[in-house]
Every structure is written in structure tokens, then in C-alpha cells.
Amino acid sequence: MTDTANLRAGWLGDLPRDFADAFVKIGRWIQVGRGQVVYGIGSEEAVLYGVAQGTARMHMAINEHEQRLSHIIGPGFWFGEYEFTSGISRLLEFEAATDLLLLHVARYDFQQLALKYPDSWQWIALLSGQHLITAMGAADDLMLTSAERRLAALLLRLSGHRLAHPASPPFEFIPATQQELAVAANLSRASAGKVLRMLEKKGEITIEYGALAILDAQALAARIR
Image (cartoon, rainbow, N blue to C red; front, side, top):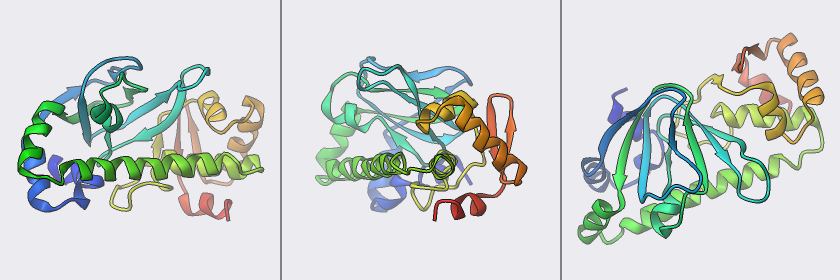
């Protein structure tokens, strides 16, 4: 797939083709190296980003909690729309897990485009709605009473097999430590480690240093049913 095709593997692919083409043209390509932060919590910029290559780690600290891993994103994912429309400071942090190629769309340029396409803000609302569904699904998964089911649901979501846009390809490599996965699944490190070792023994995942690979997504999905 080309870089532009990767951008369309998600929300952008749902939009009218003429508007999507015009939208891409007003953006500019930027590269972010592995380990660098695209933007941090509290930063101020009115920019929407789309992922063409690579994966990034999303961190949040919305309430009184410490900043923690909440999601993994890849090609076809767009982010930053709430701050883009509201003008408030950033609520999330995005860190490059690999080298990233992003399309950067500034609010001012989008406003000029909206003069030609009156439905432009409707498409941003659609993006917000898609992200809301993902967030609601993640919250629902956290209410699963079984540690095994809760962790399986998390691994599927972080790898793009669950609650993702149907056009977005999954990625089998999850750049997260066991401690981060435990926190994200609302489990103790010991409980999460026990489940992860069992899943590895069953051949459904492979545990690596600071990361995890999905080997059998179907088997993981069967654990939730």
C-alpha cells in the first residue's frame, strides 16, 4: 500500500472521495523517530494527525491517575480531533513506538477547506464518534470479571483485532511491557503475568523484552465468548 492508501485505511476512507483528496492535499508530511513524542499532555496546537506508517503508543492521565498506556495506533488511525475542534490543551500523549510517517493537518488550513465543503465539520464529528465507540468498548471490556477474558480483550484491542475500524489492518506486535499491560487491564502484575504465561504456553502469544507478539488472534477471541 502507498502512504496515501494507508491513510485511507480507516476514517478517511469513509469520506466522500473528492473531500478526502482535498483534505490530504492541505496536509504536510512529517516524520517522528522511534521513542519521540508526537505531542504531550497539556501541549497547545490545533493539528489533526493521520498515521501512514508505523505505530504509536497512546497515554492518558485524565483524572487524578498517573499517566499510563491506554491504546496502540497504526496506519489509518487519525488523532487529535477533540483539541482540533475545541481549542483546548492536549488531553493525551502520543509516543512513537516505531518510526512514524504522519500527515499533519492544521486547523487554519482545514477552516479554509470548510468554506468549500460545508459538511467538513460533520466528518470530524464522525471521527470523534468512531473514537467514542472504541473508548466505550474498552471501558466495557474492563468490566469483565475474569482476568483471563479481560486481558485477552485488551491484547486484541491493542493489536487492532478488536474495536478497530474494519478497514484498518491489525498489527501483531504490541510494544508494551507486562507491567503496562497489567495496569491497562486493571490487574496486578502477578495476576497479569500468570495469564500471559498461560497464553504463551498455549501458543497464542509470544512474550518478548518490553513487548508481546500475537500468534493466534482467533484463539484469544474465543476466550472472550
